[in-house]
Length: 309
Image (cartoon, rainbow, N blue to C red; front, side, top):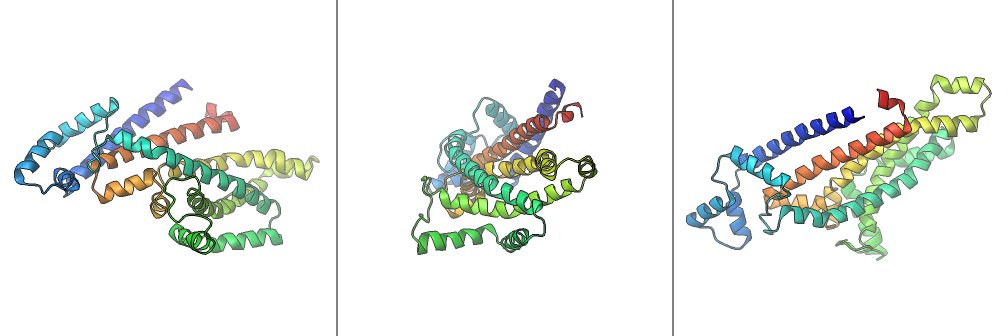
């Protein structure tokens, strides 16, 4: 167990350094000048002298590897630099947006699990029944809906026609409902089909026929054996989705002006705010590592044999 944890930590550290080198190199190769952007964002017409002075203050005159080592050393001290746009610390900007992304991710995931898991299991249990066929038809149709199209439909119905919810979420409790519904809707149509397939595959295993031959009732086989063994791939599916959601759902947060990590990243890209972009990339690496580690703990709880493997 300790050996596995050490191996995961070393792997994460190497991946993290590789990602930061890549993001730093891409920023360096960009044709935009951060000093010019900073002055322009502050309403200052940059002269050559001012540009040179700002570059020196930002440390941009130093070789790129020196800039990277300096940034990495500061990062481990908790300093990720300052935003070019707002001049506030990057960590402050990220932590300000983080609670909004967490709220949106968890509420979307909760709605998805509450709706999709029972529907997917029921479709598998009553395979080829009228219920299964209707749900399959509905999910097949809505599967082709892109997320921005779903957003526009809900905006039209719930905001413009029924006037129940605000078009601009703006971080309010009432405003979170529509982005949650959009994200959950698009995940539910995928989850129902995936969970149905997972349970049906489990039902076709040889041990199910063996239990049936030994006289175990159909309900016991389904609820105690098939569903238990189906949990691992369902947990995998949930973990991947949670990682994506916590990374910031860029499209939905931008459409509804939800002030989360995704919206912050989009604004940073449009303003070429490289310190924020680098901070966002680090956040993505951290969140995927943490979610994967958490999923591994759940796997070992569900199936203790995985500890030996």
